[in-house]
Image (cartoon, rainbow, N blue to C red; front, top):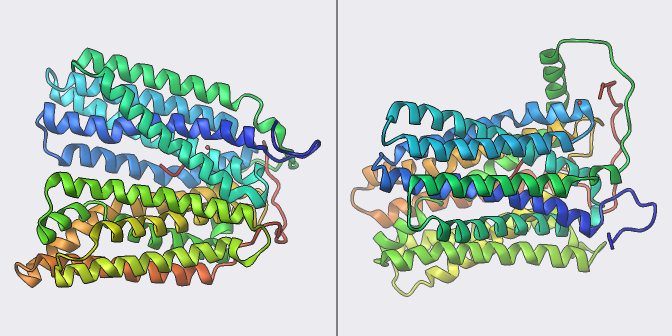
Length: 457
């Protein structure tokens, strides 16, 4: 039933699906805050677009807490309390954000203050829940099935996005602020219930090693020491740089791809909007491709996670170079939609392989530091996602100012930088020791620790 052998201390497929249900619940709350609430503030409340933009940026900024929360799970050794705590905080933040929107028409200042607190809670809840969930997956999923397990969990998260957006969107019509609060409360309550039911007894399936108690010392000092220990590991540093560079290159086109299609190719709003769907479809295919190949060809070179990470980054650079050519030539015959689809495939392949490799790498090095490593990489991703889209728009505007009215050249310049970023990321991945399936690196001596959650969204 579980897909694991008797006496096995790793997660079976049923356990992985249960953890995926938690990730789907997390995504269900987040999608309301980053899409529905964004539209309501801009359209119904007629606020400047920078207001929801700043709130979403705050949500990303709060994820700089990931290393601290990852350290907390390392100290206690259990991830479930942090996962459930994070989900509750996330749900309260989501409900608070909906209440803030309902409050803004009558009391703008108070509503905005509540929104700030709520989005901070959303970011903190995502950090606590998502990071710990990844650490639990890393510790409980056998190495050969990590890529497939990661794909299952991420697809369930995407399903959470899609189902919530569709169902909640239907329930919100005809719109009223009372209906907004009711629908949001329903989504948040269901998310919390799903998380609690899904997590019941899951962590008990894997073996925990309880460390000897340590002498009391300041919590701040313990965190700084743990961070310094992880940062002293060359592979942890290189992988942090890889995550930062690759995710910057990945996200910098988020806000400029559709304007590029409209300005350079003259596409209509409807046609350019379909580009996002094409890219996401490609990401889905890329993720499935890695999961199938690494599961079906275990032990062979084609199943190498490092190969998929490096190859995916180089393929992303190549397909991004196609957009550079499109920008420079403005050729009407260029297959832009197909180019973007292939970019999505390459992005999906490298990102899912990188997450699987991250799960493996988090358990290598000094023991008892898995949460800190995962938190460090999660913080790097949050910085990249928070800055990437904004940086892409700034660079386009700057290039536009230098090049005059040559829109195609401006976009080509930014796409070229992204392609270069993927090449740099591939080089960083090549220089990082990414253990393959079934290989266990020697761990450094563990430090004594007493008994004491993080994410991709």
